[in-house]
Image (cartoon, rainbow, N blue to C red):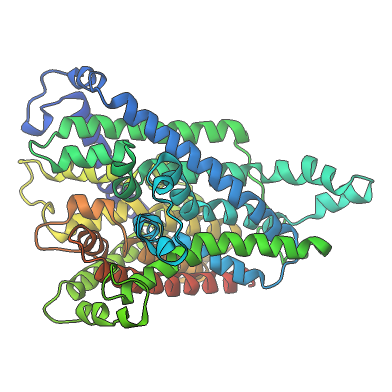
Length: 551
């Protein structure tokens, strides 16, 4: 298998997974009757979109929520990340583990957990008599719930940037007479700006694409967002494919504009360490500030992690919510129902795990090939290949779902994956492809450019060099990325709701429908099991990455 064939195969897969769905969204947006094979009335959907009475409210709500989430995430994650990266804190890995949990908890589950805590007659009112129902069901409540789930992306971006770049330059400034505050302001903060901007951008993107939290809290709060209206246009009869496509284009434009703004603000610069590998944390002693910092981190962890996690676990073992938090109301019946042969939980769990495993394998292979062709082989057209492989990072999940519906619901396909489990696999692969591409690409850049050329000189083909030289060296990073893809795919919600065929349930759809049917206990029992599984997988990935960084 030569390089040209590998390049053609990789490009074909990327076109099918990424380019085709986006193209069909654009065509449906331009031609309102495109799905019926009619190319008349070009751009007439724009007038319909602009005439939409709720458009300003939806657009304003989406931007307000997303900007609020990005700012609050930075407000929480930045100081915690700086403390983790600059200072010697007690049990540093424990804080990393604690702040991983919100990342592994799907936002919609976090929202449902907060509802059980704060709503009228919720756990907080039962225990303390305090009722925060009005705060929860408001724009402020939605922003806070989403930010408490998303802020770890800022925390890890900032702390890892500091751990990787070290404090050599700041120490040099201190030696030459700069105060600690001045060294931080003029040296450390500018070095952190790319990581902070990237974290805030990711928080913003995650917020604009989020469906579960607005669906759970937004209706009662009177908050409208683009994602919930797109889902409504696809779920309610008559199905409005043109309207959903136009709103999807709006979401893509917002996401790409945010990416462009980030690049402009950071000046296209990145900060790396001299060796390209994270250094051991030789941070400063916090002294008298150690206790206040630890208390602050514990407070954030308690609010963002322990409280909703306890609500989730507690709801899974209470017989009825109305029965209150009493020993007599504790039961394991919800877990027993999950594993009963008559229930839907085991098939849903099996479907999610199978699809997640398939997505991990496909994205791992495709990510390895794409990164190898771009970074090592430097083929012609590598910029387009790189852009296609990373484009899904800027695509809201609901946009990918709309694109796949439009692409594979056409009459001219002799065989289509639509209305089968394969469409779910395609959606997961499209959404999560950037993970292996980024991880493997980073590992390849650290290998240097001598090993594969040496193998080629001694008669190895490009494929043999990839198989016997490159793959063993990047396998830890590849496996870590595949584990993350597996963990995220196993609980993905929005495309699962849009694309799951009749009779097929995933874990996320099962949990969502349990809440819709009023079976809160079973839903939270399944959510708890999902969280534990994801945490185990993520810890495995981090362990692999840590061993790789020490080599």
